[in-house]
Length: 541
Image (cartoon, rainbow, N blue to C red; front, side):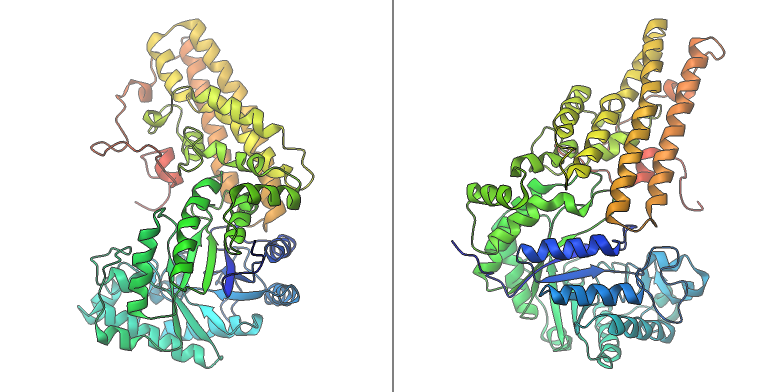
């Protein structure tokens, strides 16, 4: 059985831009853990969460890394035989920076910087200077993904219509010229090359590129093909071959799913990674990185992906024997592989570990009166979550990993009461039966304590893994939920005791959230403000 890496690079990429910036202790633990499994590269994805000299609002109040923290992490990684590689953005995904008046003129549209603007390039120069002073690695991932509306905002107002592919390549060329001053080579996400020739579609393995476009990609730029979704090897085959036609030497970035809510998706991560790595090996891809994103507020601990992190490391050494992987996992971590996999349970609809669903998040925040997502509540939800919590609680005392199980178990206890509470509320309201209403109000009262227990467990988990900045979002969301539950309880009590005769929200006919669309076996709703209310929650309009 192989014990050496079959790839030149096996890395992870940790998202430090969706509120959860790792504290230095947790970052070193991640380096220790991944290095012990054979990973040799770590990327820190930082949009505005690093310090840029002369730019005080860059990452202001976001828990940004200090130069000393990054230098210490770089030295620590090197001591473990690991490369710490910077991963930034120089085109899109700069939305948090846009909130500050100092930077609003730097933008084209949405979160996309204004290509061609000298102020933008002055900022990028300072960004490169900051990165160069903290990282010893001379390759930097500069992003440039998902800039869907490039050239369609202020750029259009200033310059009119343009060849958007050429605009992107001109911007890339200018950025690379700046970065060369600091001795950098570059890597960029590849999707925009595909989207601009495929009507916005990335995963088009039949995409063709002109000789002109291929010639304009600088020699010191490597493409990064990212794909977290497919489970059929043929999809990866087609895309790797398309990348070879565009610009040989592509790196592959897969996904360890941390970004749809509070629960991990180890099962799907392993399913997609197996197909991806088989294709990478067959096509001679030498560099593989697994990403751990934090969309929607980074509710899930990156350490909850330990089973899939271990699984990928074994595949990368030529071991695809699942029984042997389980055996090695138990020997290494002192906890059965399948026991750790139970962290997935809260986020699956039927217990199918390969189905990506985030019902633990949308049922948590689904409003008890409005019930926008009541139609998505599975039958037997209360019993399902009670069973999940029972199983998870058995592992909450594990000396190293118990805190992960404690958090998920506490969420299970919340959902045992909360998942179908809206449905039961509508039914009790229609019946107007006093005993049914009293029992319902008692459930609202019990829910408050369970929410407080979950919030406390989540806070402990967060502060163990991350800097405190960013957790205010969880305080606001969960605190708002607690107050909303209390408000609904008070109005139900008023109804029961005759102080009011009706509750307007419960009078209105409920509609299907996604009317006209085919039902999904494993639906995902990950935008908090779209779950909680159809009213204006964030934003001016």
